[in-house]
Image 1 (tube, one colour):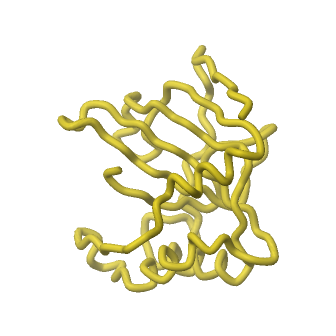
Image 2: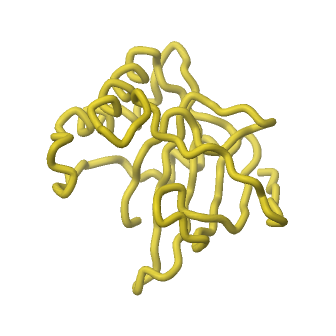
Image 3: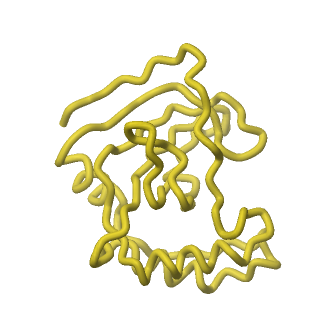
Length: 158
């Protein structure tokens, strides 16, 4: 995995509806010419999935004026998170593009249908952290949904 990042609201839709947020786990091959991104939706609920806590804590440490500095975070394997979310439903796959400039069409997308939970308090923390970045629209950092342009979305039932 090369990196992960979060969007609020989600960049993908289900039944033409955005969810509260989305995490992208970005993978690349050795020469960075091909990308595979796993997307997991976030849905506001009573509690947060425990996997999110160290990630949200790390976001608060990031100084928005120093975007070039990486913050290292010790996280549990995200494969367990993917397995938990996907064990209850469907995964979608399609060839698509990056959601940030250059928006190159080099991504093999895998999007898990069932969201993980994020509490209102934690979602507000995430949104507050996103507000600090001038590139967001009032704390929202999602690219609007794009047309499929003939691409086929495969649906895999787990």
